[in-house]
Structures are given as structure tokens and as C-alpha cells.
Image (cartoon, rainbow, N blue to C red; front, side, top):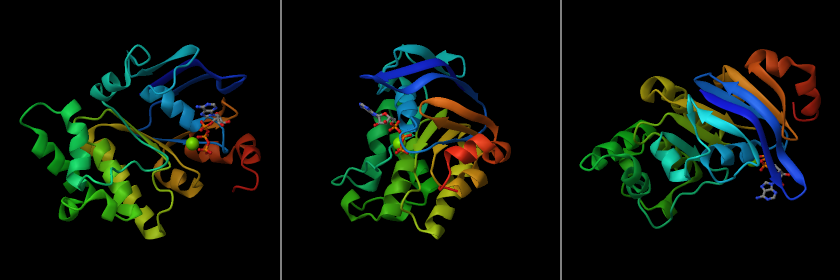
Length: 234
Ligand SMILES: Nc1ncnc2c1ncn2[C@@H]1O[C@H](COP(=O)(O)OP(=O)(O)OP(=O)(O)O)[C@@H](O)[C@H]1O
Ligand SMILES: [Mg+2]
């Protein structure tokens, strides 16, 4: 469960998050909103890259703001970035191993990497270098990194952008397995409303840093205010 209470982020004179309060409980929750709505900024607050000027965020009952980004990773927070971050001169297994040092006990690293490789269907390419991977494989590497070492909350920032329809479908199916297989909650940002509709039982809509809607995805997407904010988009 993600709890956001009275959150304000300020950059100079603008507030990309402005008095936002919300509780997200769905196993796979969606976060949508127009460009610049504050979606990535919210993920940055949750993962510790942006410091708000007011408010709090918590993972379950655990307040996150007092923790460093690394402490949050140890507490089970994982994320992928809007632009993929695969390290070109590391192998697929090496990219995944980069996180195990922080979250897996000594002696369990190889098993943790192998489990993540198997989950993402990357076992056959484990020794390939990052630079040789196509976009789909890169997105899978990022997802594999997210499931290492008892994740509790996985934040995905437009993880399926640029994938073909078939790749997107395979990616969605993997993400949907996460709550049951890893007992982790997923929060996914995407502009593809069909993707959100098919994956997320609960969706939050941001608009200029404010909460425009939050609730069951079907009713949120039918909300006239949401449709207005998205005019031209769907
Ligand atoms: N580090 C920063 N310094 C100043 N302004 C920023 C910074 N990061 C983001 N912003 C601004 O904050 C607002 C929210 O940006 P954010 O990246 O959170 O939007 P978003 O909802 O993720 O949009 P998109 O759908 O385009 O990814 C934008 O106006 C953006 O220009
Ligand atoms: Mg963004």
C-alpha cells in the first residue's frame, strides 16, 4: 500500500506536485495524466530522488522520506526509468547482479540473478552484453532487476513505451504475475489507456500536480473530468 499525504514538490516557482493526498492499494495500480502532470516527479519522491517541501509518503506503515534512496531499495522499493538504463558494457546477468549486492544476502546472489533471469525469460541471453540488446530485451532486463531480492513496491515509468503490440502483450503478462509471485505491489505509469485498462484495477489521475481522480479504473476512465483532461488523447 502506498500512502501519500498532503505532498508538495516545488521547483523554482512551479509545483509539479501540489497538495496531493492518495492511498493506493491495488496489486497493480495505474498512474496516468497529461505530459508534465507530475507522474515521474511522484515516482522520484517515492524513490528518493526528489525531496518534497511538505507532506509524507509511506510504503505500508513505513514512512519513506526519512530514508535514503538505498535504504528504500533495501526496504523493497524498486523502479524503472522512463528511458531505459541498461549498462551497455555489462552482460544481462551483470546488469541484474548490480542490484543483488544491495538486497540479497551473501551466498545467495547467483540464485537471485538466475531467478530474475528465468522470470523475465532472459536465461538464454544472460551472457550477452547490454549493447547487443534490442529495446524489448532492455525493458525485460529492467523488469528483471525490479524483482530481485524481495521487492515490496515496484514503480514502472512507461515501461512498455516503444514496444510492438506483441512485445507489449508479453510484457504486460509478466508484470501481472508480479503480485502473486513476488508479493509486491506494482505502480505503473503509461500513456496507453488500453494498457492501463487491461492491467490496473485501480488508477490515479494527476493533472498539474493535483489529484484529478482515483478509484476503480473503469469508473476513473469514464469520469468526465478525466476525459476532458485527456481530450485528443482518447
Ligand atoms: N528537476 C526538475 N527541475 C525543474 N522542473 C522539473 C524537474 N523535473 C520535472 N520538472 C517539471 O515538473 C513538471 C512535471 O514533470 P514530470 O516529469 O513529473 O511530468 P510527467 O507527468 O512524468 O510527464 P510525461 O508524461 O511527459 O513524462 C513538468 O513541468 C517538468 O518540466
Ligand atoms: Mg514522466
